[in-house]
Length: 68
Figure 1: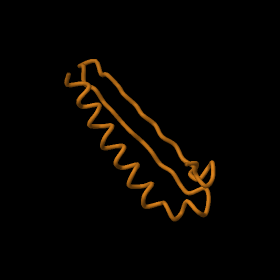
Figure 2: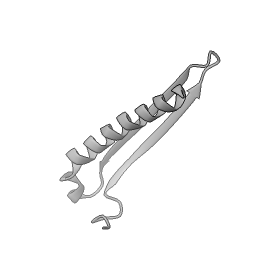
Figure 3: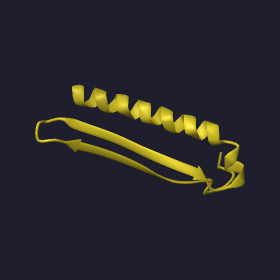
């Protein structure tokens, strides 16, 4: 199923992983978006929820990866 519009959201996602000199690992996820189409305003709560869920899940995956 294709989205109603091809550019419904405008924003940015950034993933950053840093390894310090003391072998500390820093992981950062930054994501923000805004509706770029009037129909995407209806889905805003869902999009926000999915962004938060992704941040939590990716953090858990990174923790698992560095602990193995």
